[in-house]
Image 1 (cartoon, rainbow, N blue to C red):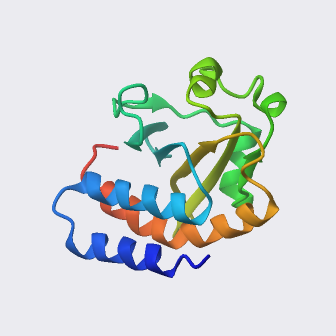
Image 2: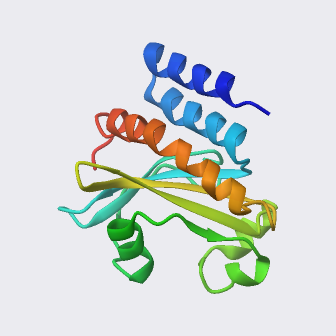
Length: 165
């Protein structure tokens, strides 16, 4: 399956958007085409202010775009920031203890997650957070997720102009 049409549709949306939510939705659709996703969010990071903010959500009814939350700098975050490591949990057991809202995540049919760090100019702009059914994010999907990084850089740079980070 080729993803070229999905990348072209993404580029067209960025070229012509009038509402910034269209940009997040375009990356959501691209992610669906490239790796698959049931629950999709984008989290912007402001290191200087020490907080994060959800700037896009596929499920705003349960994961709304609200204010900021304190940035938690733990081993997971440091791996993403320093190694630019894509983090994958591909089993229901692996999800245990990693999500405070695991019951809600599971109610949406998700037991696997992938978090893709998005960096530009040595700054962690944010993360792509995709969740889906157990087993979804195999090694080939993790490799494919790397193709989302450049589109995500454009997305975050656009969205940061529309949200107080």
